[in-house]
Image 1 (tube, rainbow, N blue to C red):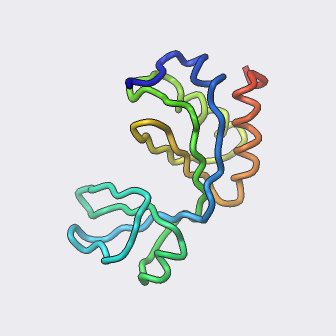
Image 2: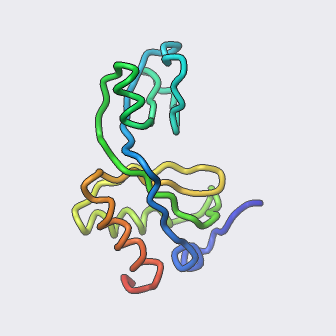
Image 3: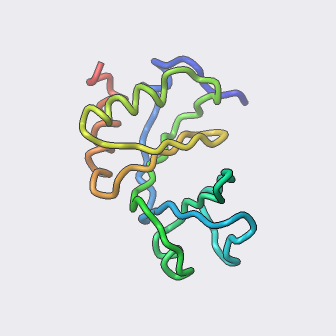
Amino acid sequence: MSGETNLDRLLRGMSAELVDGVYVFATVAQGDVPKGLTPRMMFHEAEGVTLVLLQDEAQAAGLAFDFPCRMITLNVHSALEAVGFIARIATVLAGAGMGVNPVAGFYHDHLFIPENHAEDAMHLLAQLAKGALD
């Protein structure tokens, strides 16, 4: 399963799902990920391990965190080599004054949007999928 690469089909075929919970970004030293955490994502960088996890979980573990956000899953199987999909979405969101931290999974792309912009982002994504923002 390689996923869709055609930008028009990706945009028209996507539906956005607002995932429950408030997520945050935290960082810990290599090898210092607290036991019992279930991060949505872990990314190893030279400076440490970035964790994307639920805010409640970060607080319970005593982790310092940043960027309270909501996760939006784009329910279309985008190919990892698809060109322009996230760029188009980021451009639309930026035009509305929203930052976005996208993460590509094997099957779907996921957007981490500032918590207070989640509903506005959902509306814009629905408009984009309908072709109303062309």
